[in-house]
Image 1 (spheres, protein in one colour):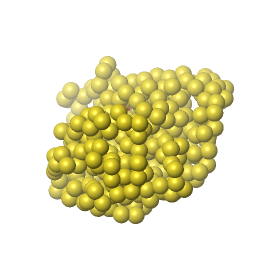
Image 2: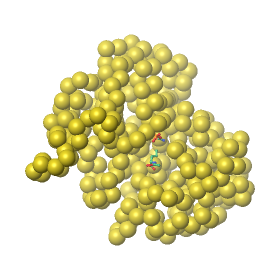
Image 3: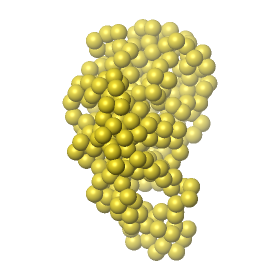
Image 4: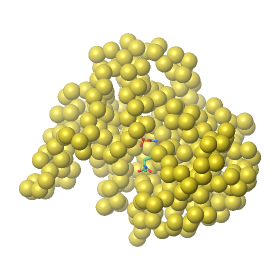
Length: 317
Ligand code: AN0
Ligand code: CP
């Protein structure tokens, strides 16, 4: 695997899930594979889980790991070509990428949507430059439009907890105080659309996601209660608007969309999921996230597994 952004990059999902179970059985079985190899993780944005789980996965494979926080200690990077660089940015990404690539074998990039230019965000302008100019395998650790390591971990979790052959999985928008990217819901919809589940998406009017990601959904509705009826998994997430002219904007703060015990009562004893970090009592009540049906911790733990499968594939390449 040379790059990892979309579900297609991983190929057959049942093969990927079998590899994940293999990693779970013995996560140190491939210690030789990464010997004297280096993973470079580049963060343009904050992270807790991605940073720790991906580093752990690389260490399980015997790799060395370098982490660069661009905001803390690196030169401010210019990303636009043709700019007269007389501002606060001392170095251009076009030099920085090949330099960074010369010190490593595999690269992970976290670079959120900037919400300045939808075309730039949806062409994955930043991570595409890493793919083009590094000459190394590159994976997304949440880039402008996708968070595939999260979606893969979510799929592993659903596979482990499902009680039906083909569970009903609901992706529901929930309220938040900040404008968040569409990357997590985009990837979740894309991966669930390709998996053996019935995907239903619920959101208020104006929060339609890019159809490129949601085309595998059985139903997309503005009625959250209808969506939750009989659900096996409830995946809550806030996102900002995708549709023009409101790209990147908050259109609703409707607290009726928060996941409460009453909402969970509509499901078939459904599990609650969220990628974290989550703001309690905005997205979900304390009661629901602390309930025995909350999967947020095993879901986060599976981030180590999804990262290990992906890095392993890149090392085998
Ligand atoms: C980010 C997001 O919504 O994309 C990261 C989630 C993994 N969340 C926040 O910025 C709070
Ligand atoms: N879920 C997730 O990616 O968390 P972090 O932003 O903390 O890495």
